[in-house]
Image 1 (cartoon, each protein chain N blue to C red):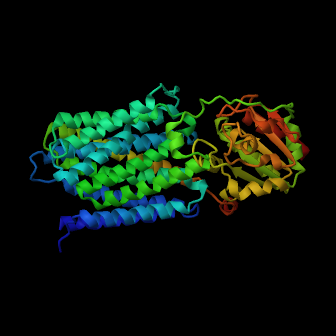
Image 2 (image 1 turned 90 degrees about the vertical axis):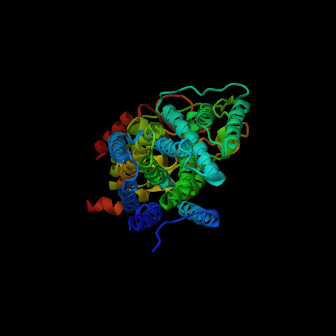
Image 3 (image 1 turned 45 degrees about the horizontal axis):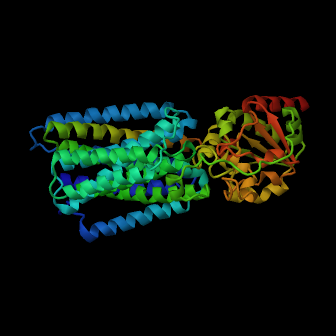
Length: 103
Length: 460
């Protein structure tokens, strides 16, 4: 099985369209009380950029590429880890009256 | 074989991101949602270590650099994220978002400097991602500095919009010019232009509008990540990036709508600079003692509390909830009413109340509770101002005219807990304070709460 993916031309456009609608639909029905955690949560999800930075650094051949790639990975990892920690902290605080009584 | 593993893991990661984001959109399942998305991230990062190509003479150095960079980035962000107070959350999100934008720009830089990006298609995607990512990076850092109080002035000069437009067009022009003929120094000029535009676009925007701008940059970073994903042919980046790009755009528009302003108005007008103008409200302000307010609430059957950012500044959320619990124990129905822009960004107030332990099912959004103020015996405003100003409904000359507000003035009695006689963020006098059914309780919110709790306890 050939496991390499080539995402170009119309395939790329289809993926773009479907992913864009998915994002739109998910956020469209969200209550305002979750806007801050959700902004933070989506901020975490684009932290996957660290993967691309890892790829760039892994394939670096010159010193310049290594330096830029190195900072790219630091920034991407910070985005992912930081986004996760603050989102988790915020969401962990939401409780309903029932949870309150159980304590 | 290794390719199959990478692609399967990316598929799993993309699924977990979408599933996690979906779970995060309801308060009941939100906690689980971030855990699922987190698992997706771990899978994607671990499997990406397999990118290291042993044919590359530098592969050992590169692998070591990757591991070191991952450790530095993770450790720093984890440590920062754990200790940041909830009131500073908006600037922290701005900072993390800027880092993501910077990472996307860095990927583009490597691809462009090394000329890995081949052909017009890939190069234009890489350049576009670099532009958006670079703007998001430098813009988010300015937003962070402003919200964190490191930069208090909004820099404005005449002809600013023209200057910004020239920089943007020049940068795009350089991008088009170098398509197909990448040269290092020209790529550098392009990046300088993108970073400069991010700074120039953000410096004139006032602190109150910054949350909307952060949300916009969040969408920008998502889009930049998606574009670089197309360049690298990385499906996890494409799906996650485009997902956040569109979700973030919608979230930005929702926030702008909650403030009753268009996005263009926020980005290109100088709110807060306008002269309040017109006639100020007339009449006298009445004041009341904290204990009187507490007693009035004890004998009420329904109390609605409208908290604002001032509550969080005074760190009075815990005392407020303690007071509310005493009222509830006495059989008073208590609800919280949250204006969409209470706090520093939409939903920020909910997080601050949640931190104090207030259950989310007694917290209501503006549209759900505005009809209930008529039936409330007492409405309490704590540290909020513009969001309860009836001038927004009636006074056409007011800069906040048309902004939806909480109808606290319809309650039988209104208590406003306030530090002094100052104006709100918009610089507008508040007609509510002069109304016949309003009494002001002056003092630091936390001290007032302590006094009110004391008064209730004395009544027994």
